[in-house]
Amino acid sequence: MIARTLHKNNILRNAASLDSVFSSGKKLSSSSCSLYYLKTKSDADFRVAFSVGKKTHNLAVNRNKIKRFMREAFRLNREKYGVSSCDMVFVFFDKDIPTYEKVENSIKSLLLSLSKTFES
Image 1 (cartoon, rainbow, N blue to C red):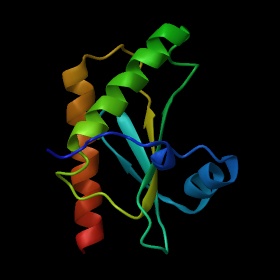
Image 2: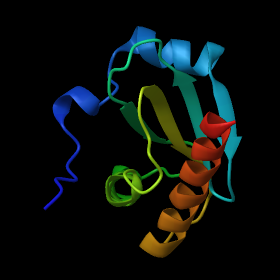
Image 3: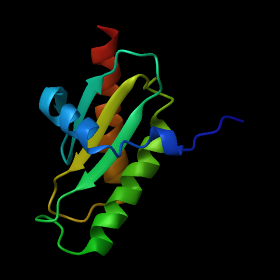
Image 4: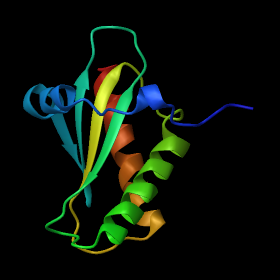
């Protein structure tokens, strides 16, 4: 059985790394999410962060729920699209509180676009 967990070393927490992803990385967008990514030089594993804006979702309960949906969708679908050796930040910008299916479709489309850009 394949372990599909997100380990502590796969979480992008460093402020300098986050700034470099936003400043010098590239952006992909879907209907409700954006993906900022930066290809790393080493063959290290991926690092990922998830963000939901406070202006669009005032309550922390709603922001945390959306981030849980995003983490779960990423965790279940990352191996299918072959994500490796890059830093990624998923940003949710839709004003509505989504269902898990909507978030999963958005994450899948972003991962598919990311894998296509890495192939070419």
